[in-house]
Image (cartoon, rainbow over all chains, first blue to last red):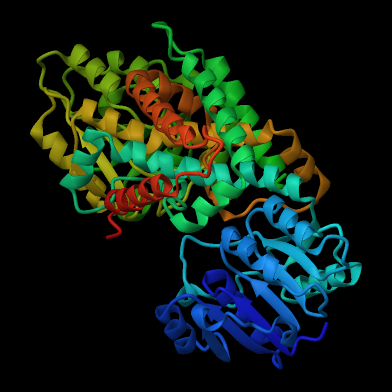
Length: 297
Length: 297
């Protein structure tokens, strides 16, 4: 894969970190960035994340063909607006880092029709509650999973090149269909973000808790709450976009959660002692499933 | 505070770590342990966590008065069974590490009546998904909060001695009434454990997710799920006991959570686009509350 000129469209934490990684693994690559704000532009220049930075409103006439690789590192809603402007015949490889896949792949299919193209959708499973180019780090993608989704008319060559690219920068990859991706991610990523955020707001609305919190100068919470709230409230814009794109699966996962929590809540309906054996079963199941999901056993 | 002979009744992670800390800060203290199983006894001997280990069934006639400090490091339900056996006149200081306070303080009040006594209830806010004496570490309590609850007939002297003890081993302390403790902890600790466990079980019951999980050898999950599931399913026995002791406040916190999640779920009822401004408000509130609760701003 020739990688002399790379355009990273949208350069926050993900795009910025990708740039640092590319500089390390492909030292000859020249990196171009497109961003929306002067502030981002200045941060990128300050951190030397790109060789040239263009502001979004200067870029109406991007000549996509001049790049070997174009990476869309913006929320999915923005990616969807860009896809219709891509050239149908081009040797450039296009790739997004979108957190949902169905709407992107649908837009790609719609745009390219039966034309053979080089658009591959990628989802590197990493991130941080940090955002913005200043948070960029060179090893963000190291040893992380990158899920690759191949639209039906995408060339096998481009898929293999993109796969190689991620392996070269230290990620490991698996292919996944768009709908399987979106359903799975609803459960292992999107729902957890909702739950974390709701949990913080529930605690924040409890008067007694907040009186105690306010009365002392250090945090009253232990590691449990800290871990459970780490991802709460982060990056509202990105998550609003993800939820919009994945609303059917996310809705189902929320319904599953409410159902499961209501079942648990029933244990507290009686005046008698809690049914300890039910709690043990629920806990044992979670322990087992956690080990399976996280491959720790 | 004279600390020549310390009895730690129940020696898992918490009691074992307390022992290691006492050995460091009070090198002259002789440490006695009471445990339920031969396995624990062997682990304690192996890790040199106590100078003498008694098995629970050998201990019917504990002479409490021979210890300067007795620490109950067992689930609350076990502490409740021990309180009625304590001597009403004794210079020994008694202390539990219970995760809930109302039932313990009620049992202490009931047992001692108006007798001036030396029973102080402590809740060191630390722990781990690890359990058992082999997981004990010497600095578990370093820089951690220990909440102290003084039953009404407890002597001020004993309260101050216990306070001093925790400060000496590196914790920082705050006094808290039993009911305020239990309500606050429901929101910042007990509910998070429920939510984490339910989340894992919801993901574990989704067929697509588990098919993907099974098809590859590495974990598909990112840091969000990992953090959100860390405390899931851990220590069922301890949590069943905590839930039993704190069922009213925990029930309220679960109801608050379901209500809040149902409100969020309503955003997905319409066929139209998600109301992004509502998501922004919920997310912004969580970010603000998280900073307040964790004192990061």
